[in-house]
Image (cartoon, rainbow, N blue to C red):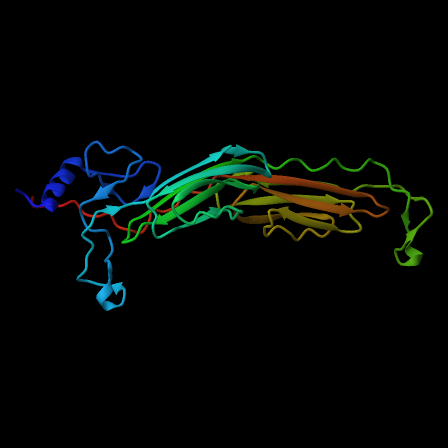
Length: 296
């Protein structure tokens, strides 16, 4: 009669190698040809790393290769809804099995996603979201049996800014004789509003890409301020003139704003936007797959 390890190895050769559905993991070998997609998946080969050696105080022992089956974590993730408006929320549902050595979790860009420390299941409300976002979970069942999975939420473009003020000057005028202090008298001069032109080329880029903002400003005797949402390297527009600004790298849908003042409360604001593609998938885990037995 063949030894137990040899009989199991023969079954492994017949079953072949496969990856856990829904997870980016090192390959594992089914113990039987009828193993279901969500069942524990065992390999008859040692796990990728050495086992702790009790005789050396718990250090990794070269002579103590793991001989028991190597069980990989099983991670399920989904987002509901998977598409939200700018600033919206979603719920990430998760389920983890076979993660004796715990889990880590993160999102890209960073959000309030977290709290998945090991085996179990639950849901995490994530938001507000201002750009396409991926949510990642990586778990360890010991001896190098590591799995990783992720899900994503796509986010709509930001809303337009509020409408500009009505084309009339406010009631208070700037009094030059009082060093710019507000005078209670009504404005007596003509009220001319700043004119601001903005455009982005290209208006759509890949994740981490760059764009160029072209701008032109007139009638802004009291200067301009400028900013972006999310914050970027956009800036340098301080008053009348024209020019271009290279902006990037961009990791989410971004708007670029300019606000100018021509005195007497004659203020105008304009903006343009750049849409940014989804981030690339994460790299595969570092753990190596156990080898298929040979020479049987």
